[in-house]
Image 1 (cartoon, rainbow, N blue to C red):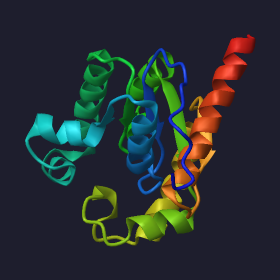
Image 2 (cartoon, rainbow, N blue to C red):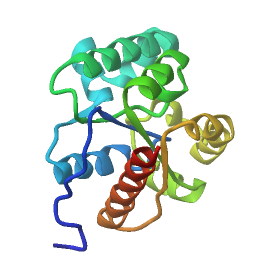
Image 3 (tube, rainbow, N blue to C red):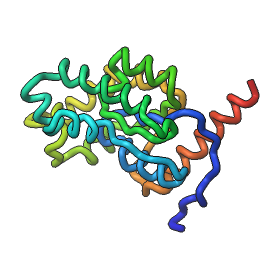
Image 4 (tube, rainbow, N blue to C red):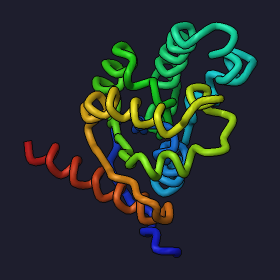
Length: 189
């Protein structure tokens, strides 16, 4: 089965929220994780676009980041309150940086930070027109600055998994193992 584990029965009593920088793999790994666990997957940026009736890039351009973060917070709160409650939610790279979203996620979800190094992030985000912060800029410089500003905040997540330039099944297996370890430690308390 391509090196992927058989579907795991992992006890979950709350949603999983994927956090990290753009290009870390939150959406692709989150989708694979949800499929493996047999639970729904939701991409918060796609839900924001549905609610707003336009793209994330357009929201940033027309209303600015502050308004985007306000809408993002409301959408994530709605996702956490909408059944089924156990699901995987992939968030935009700035969601967890917002105090209100982070507090909500840390209280009500299992947060997983997918940590990637600068080279991998640059490789994965180059030539994408869907990243508002990287449009018409030096993406390496912006990503390096975001790493400096945000990795200490992402480190507040319940679980951290380092992502590499590897196939998704290897990363998925690392995430599944990390969830099992986290749950085992929680059970020991």
